[in-house]
Structure formats: C-alpha cells, structure tokens
Length: 425
Ligand SMILES: Cc1cc2nc3c(=O)[nH]c(=O)nc-3n(C[C@H](O)[C@H](O)[C@H](O)COP(=O)(O)OP(=O)(O)OC[C@H]3O[C@@H](n4cnc5c(N)ncnc54)[C@H](O)[C@@H]3O)c2cc1C
Image (cartoon, rainbow, N blue to C red; front, side, top):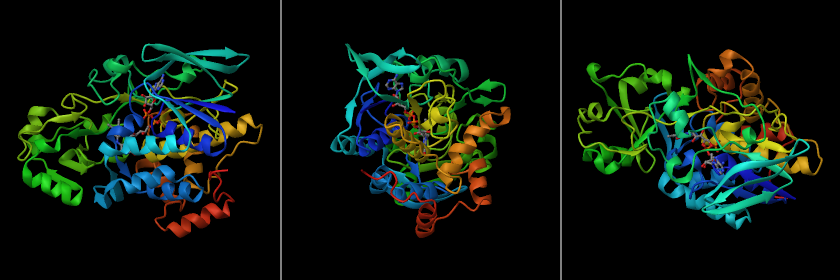
C-alpha cells in the first residue's frame, strides 16, 4: 500500500509518519529543500489549550513529533501576554531533527519535488507528477494526502497583502505552492478578512545580533521581552490583519513582544523598520524573516478543502487533507494533530476499514468537527481557530476540555477507547 503526501509542513510530516507507522509505504513530496514549511519560522508550542491537545495526541500514541519539539525547546513554561506554559522550540535546529526521524522510520522523503499535476481515473487520483529539480517525476499511489498548506504564492501576497515579502517559503526559488486538491478538481474554500480574503501571518523574526545587549540578555535568559511603546509609536489597526487571532490582543499592539525561538520572534505581522529602529534598544534592528518584515507578511488561508471529520476531501475518492488545508486551523500543534488523523485514515481507507472520527469529548475531535461546521457559515469563515486562544480556546474552557493535568487528559483518552490508537502497528 502506498500513501503519497504532497507538502512537508508539520501536517505532511505527521501524516507521513503516521501512515508509515500503520504499515504503509509513505512518500513525502516537498517543493523546497527543507521540511516543516511555515514551521521553519514558528516555534511556539504548548501555549494554553495546545498543552491539552499535545497530551491528547501523545496519549493516543502520536507523540513522536511533540517529543522532538519538547527536546528542542529553548524555553519551557514561558508566560507572555494572554499565554501560559508555552514552550519555544529552536527554529534553527528543528528541521534536521524531524527529517532524521522520518528517514529512520522509513518514510521516503523527496525534497525539491514540486507536485504540479494530477492524473484522475474514475473520481480517484491515480498519480501525481511534477519536477524534482530539473527531472520530471510521476508517482502512483493508492491514496493521497494534501498537506500543501495555504501560504502564498506571490500572486496572492501581491493581491491580498503588501506584496511578496520574501518569506521562508522562497517561492521565487522553488516555485509557489500548488494545491493537490485544486488540481484534482476540488473547489477550495477561502478565508475572509472583512472585505478582503485570506489573512496575514502574524509574526516576524529579527536577527538577535541586531538587538541591544540588555534586550538580548533578557531574551536569552527568560525567553520573553516586552517593551512598552510610547503612545506616538503605536501602530493601530495591525491586529485586525493577523491570522493568529490568539495574539490579536491590545498588549501586542501597545508593546513590542519578543520571544526567543533561536531568532527574536517579533509578535506582529510587520513593523516599519524606521519606526522599529526609533525604539531604544532596536536602533540596529534587522529582519531575518520575512526579509521585508518592515512592510508586510505572507498571506494564508486562501485554499482550504471541503472535507468530512475523517479528513477525507469531498469529491475525490482517495484524497485526505491535513493542517491548514483542513480548515482555518492555525498552528504547528493543530497541523500535527490533523496530519496524524489524515495519515491514519488514509491507510484505513485503502484497507476498506471504517475511518476514525475523533469524539468531541477530546479537544482534537471537537476542533476537527467544530471548524468544519464553522466554515459552512460566513461568520465562521472570517475567524481562525487554534487550541491556544481566541474562540476555540474559549470553547475548550467552556466545555471543560482544557487541562494541564497529563493524567486527566490520559484518562479522557482512555475513556474514549483511544489510548495508543496511533501507535506503531
Ligand atoms: C511567520 C509564521 C510564524 C508562525 N509561528 C507559529 C508558532 O510560533 N507556533 C505555531 O503553532 N504556529 C505558528 N505559525 C502557524 C503554523 O506555522 C502553521 O499554521 C502550520 O505549521 C501549518 O502547517 P501545514 O503543514 O498545514 O502547512 P505549511 O507549513 O504551509 O506547509 C506546507 C508545505 O507544503 C509544501 N508545498 C506546497 N505546495 C507543494 C507542492 N505542490 N508540492 C510539494 N510541496 C508543496 C510547502 O513548501 C510547505 O513546506 C506560524 C506561521 C507563520 C507563517
């Protein structure tokens, strides 16, 4: 049995690992020269309800990638405005660690392999093709998973953002994102932002070396630096642009908030360079990602797949999806959880077994179902969902799903009869 996964962000990596653990051959196609996609510049884990979701997935036997992010955390139990018990992984070292794990588990990883075409046969995908470097490739499979994400390509960043800002996705070098589902004829869904479409990514990275020594010391020591902005320097209105609604709090407008993820993660979609350099301690500030972080950020959430709660894409017999493709879900934790479910159900599908739908007694199950339902409404399409804040974290709390007690989470998973369900067979 062969599972072909297009896109190696956190969701694609989780899908490939899970399919492999279930005994399938798993081939992971990635258009750039590195895995992890937008996860190459993220780093925040375990904040608020992400702690619970992480422990749920671990109890279900899907915790390997979270074990790696835990091992690679520069700071643990960090507090920053509106967020508790966060871990911050080192973005500089994460990717090779994940690649080594996938290779050790027997996942076939093809980098610089950009899928651009799909061959359909009687409502099923028979093969995908594209180029690996200059060489054409064509890959047949029994089942396919679309984890190509929703970020860019530059035409979208030009149309709905402030232009290509040269982010980590490096579309001009490797070719832009191409959606597997769209190529298979699926009409994708589009997130909204008032009158506009998509949403702007919500953080940038500064070169640590460009910060004043006092700020740098604090950042390295504690993981967090919050610098209040003088009234005249507050740039109002940027919060509404953010796709990370969990950080759309006034504290992130009134202060410069930095987190140590190896780089200095600046918690705002962009900040004009001259204005930033006018703040004491930031006189030499320089952007590391995106390179034009003084002007804008990447645009996301423009191509999501209609899907059911097993993460099967509607309209194509043998296609599943995970991560941002599966809806307006923001975050690495969310991508790992949905990617794991997609990888698991892809294998079940080929074996003609009943797919797993996670119950709403688990935060992950509730998120998968709730987001699907929300995306059927105009209002729902204008929101973003994450375990770590905003509407979905509020819902977790209201439904008693948020917990930082590992034993309690394990018991809940056990009660649902799902302990170890994703573990290696
Ligand atoms: C700047 C920034 C900072 C962030 N910070 C955090 C954070 O701190 N914590 C957090 O939890 N979340 C963060 N996020 C959000 C988080 O990164 C994403 O929501 C999540 O990781 C998405 O994962 P994904 O696998 O769905 O998609 P992506 O990460 O977008 O991965 C998709 C992958 O598919 C590849 N691809 C696309 N088309 C093709 C094709 N045709 N063929 C082959 N490969 C293809 C892409 O190159 C990419 O590697 C951040 C996002 C950004 C942009």
